[in-house]
Length: 276
Image (cartoon, rainbow, N blue to C red; front, side):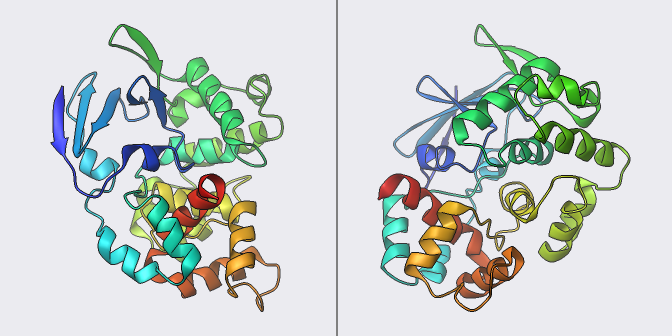
């Protein structure tokens, strides 16, 4: 196995906080088959030990190990609940997952819990993704847009996706036709990228924010779901005068927490689900 010494990083908190569906628990570590090969990573103290099916992999990029956590946490700290959230998982980092798997996963996530989403995405991988032999087992990566074009809406519905099947199928068509491009999105600012993602069928504000934050690296993105809505309403006055609009609430949260609002969101989300 290769190894990498890390500072201020928790593999468990980063991969178990609900922000990624590319990494799956496997023994003492985690497997990711969505990056064109398979990588296994486990943590022992301040060391990451990892093995790949083909080439070396840039864990510094995948886990955003260069993000200045001390600075981030100073900037987003506001009161007791935020401080408690950070103290609960102080070494949690925002993930840097591949674009298309992130998009498909969060389209599956609409009104579904994490185990159900994992089941849906596992089915998509096994039906249309590339298979890899690794450490005596077979793993499946999320299909590319070209591979997924073989799936009909009916095929997707057989995996339990219901109306989400139409979202994924039509969004995939738009990507294949070049209407939305990952390359172009990465050259945009957050507002423009978010607006462009919303052009994809079924991609609402929250899914667009999840893709912006967990794949495209817009750390100001602030996804809002029922957990975040509840914790903000109970502990902050951020949403009190902006009405019911998601976009206004998101704008207010970004203004309040600043350029690292996405980190604030993930600390609050993880703490509200697991820490209290």
